[in-house]
Length: 589
Image (tube, rainbow, N blue to C red; front, top):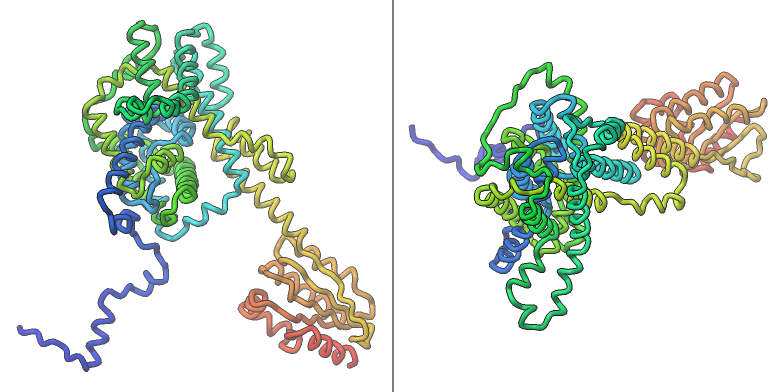
């Protein structure tokens, strides 16, 4: 059947065109965040110069990520290839789909304690399920534009659990650093201390020497690399010197101390002796055992992974924003990309991933201009796995422990402890409480208690900021039965007691109470209920409550709750003078 086009002047034409592509009403009401990776915008005007800069930065970050990925995986209680596969898959997806131009994703030190504890309590299969569920939760947080909520977590809590995690990472590395071989290492702080003490007779001085040399090398290498600028011009510009100067300290210590261990045949554990090496192959898709009963008990681990991943990734993105002149990151798109990465990675044997500050900073300082650098970093790691995996079996575990000790030291914000005396006691309690709870118990308890304390202290401070002051009426009132007060701050559930105390200040002959609300910035339902109760108390005493100079939010709440009718329209006045005039009329009746 022939199709006849609708004439342009036909009313149905505009209706037909407007209905095409229109979102359903329920979908538009949700106000979902659009899925638009930053890569699409970064490729506009992309040129050869930016490409070369991104490739160089990506290769540099790939070299830095190689030892860290293996070290994080081993410290988390999984095989080293799990860390490599996570850095490859999650690193690629986070860069390709994320909302930041230069952020690098992958396994992070902050997850070590969490992952080790989940494996210890629930097993590896449940870790993979929990990671995938956490990825779905992170995606939903971004989709519903909740990325900004992560910024509402107080900085004292973030510093507290970050320093606590750094202590736990350092503690977890003492086993390999001292050359101990306990059959099982507990996940809790006290259990680890007891285990280290119980197996102290296995102390290996060779392992401690390698770990100490690793830390010393990581500290000194940047200074040694900077000394190449003092060399004569022909030698300074030679490619061996330039390549050596750009090599990360972790790779230098890994290669040199690994060769030293092999040449001297030192009796220390290596990746090969403990894990059998790293497979020289691509990760294969695997579906973990999935049961509903198992999922129900993974609620807390899932929320912990999602919360920590969201916090770390958005903090990392903010750090990157402050280091570059590139457009600022989109927190919702970043969370959606993190969610996708954590939903996909577990099915290839990976562990939780998030934004990593150390690798992101390296990426920025290496000249990255777009997410292409992060994609190159993932491809570089893939080539290393395919071409050089057998060499990884010779890496001494004490050297990786030294690398993680150095990471833990740089991860902690230890100077914040020295600055505590500059802050009030509430800040100190929250920071130190979160720190000690993270170390002694776990991160979930620490964040929960920290948030509760932060909320309680905030309520306490806001309730003290709310004040009620008497207004000096002067000659404006001719009747002694008229009293007036002005409210300052926020009248909420934590401050209603001060309104209730007004009843004690009323005289027997009080006929009218005027409350000026021009300095009241907000009112909640508990505060409104306190005003209603005050009105009823006055009504029983044959007195009247008049409100005046209401700001938009308090007036809107009163009108939406239909309390304007209860108060009476004549008792809601726009100005103090109008309220006093109404008070005179009422008092003189």
